[in-house]
Amino acid sequence: MHPPTPMALRHVQADAAAGVLVGAPANTDLIVLFMLGDMGRDSKKWKEPNEFRPERFLPGGEAESVGPLPRRKETSRMMPFGAGHRFCPGVGLAMLMLKSFLAALVRKFHWTAPTDAVVDLTELDGFLKTMKKPLSASLARRT
Ligand code: HEM
Image (cartoon, rainbow, N blue to C red; front, side):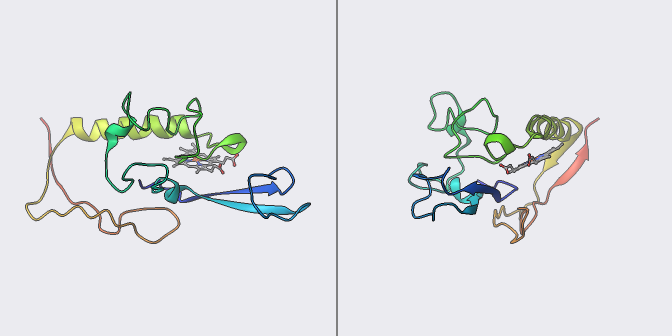
């Protein structure tokens, strides 16, 4: 729902893209912008795309074959790490680090939300996506 990199840029030759880019003039170089954030909000491709439903990605879910890793071939619905020959080479490291970082935070600290906590997922309007209103939490080191 919130890919940190909002777009991927690609140089294409109109001839090579014939049939894909409708109306592209022949013999020209084009720059195509893939709007990675918007792809995940496409209601023609996703059921209720604005609902946070991680279970979509479980076996049998509507997004079973979709995902960031290159072995998952389907990229028309989701490509947070890009696609094709410029696919992000850091995907393995990024996924590993995200999981181990999150696991370490849960393992090391006891987390509580402030009583007036509001989760507002509005994005800050910048190139890299971050939260406009950061989450707040109280942490106590686990003994
Ligand atoms: C959550 C973390 C990350 C996200 C969402 C992400 C996303 C992306 C995206 C969208 C692209 C453009 C792909 C395209 O143009 O088709 C890219 C390219 C790239 N990423 Fe990442 N990335 C992440 C982490 C990393 C890490 C950890 C590294 C290195 C250790 C890395 C290294 C690169 C490099 C070198 C490219 C350029 C590849 C090329 O142009 O051939 N990324 N990444």
